[in-house]
Length: 177
Image 1 (cartoon, helix red, strand yellow):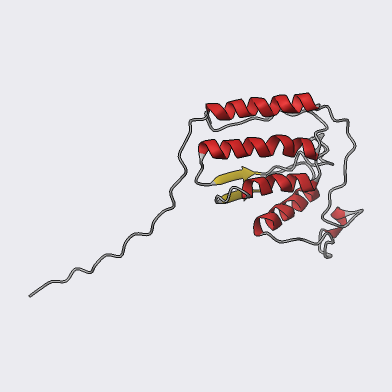
Image 2: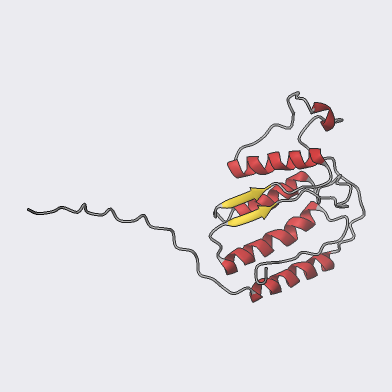
């Protein structure tokens, strides 16, 4: 809704460095300005390399770095595994996002399972790099980032949420005879 939406209109062929270079500073500014009690992230995977409709060059590591940028704010984070048009890449991304949230490393090798054949030819958690022309330039990425930062400045400022204090224990009612 109004005062809560920031769009990052990026062009085909976006690289991982381009994504992180725009996403991280905008999220940092938005969190500083809005001071949310919690963050909800629908982390769609359509931007990953190999997505049939996404047309981007974003590797899985950069997608995960964006999730880590959210985690760095130390707010409750609800990660929703948004979709993409490559089911295997979506599953890979969700695995990496969960590992990032749990602060654990995951092995690249997949154990054999009922859908193992879908992960060929690598049979791993990596996403193959795409080689699409990057239609984003340094200037266009800077313009998107600056436009988004101007939008953040228009968000009504909030104060940092106070941690909830537990209720003080109540003295039991005692009747005097």
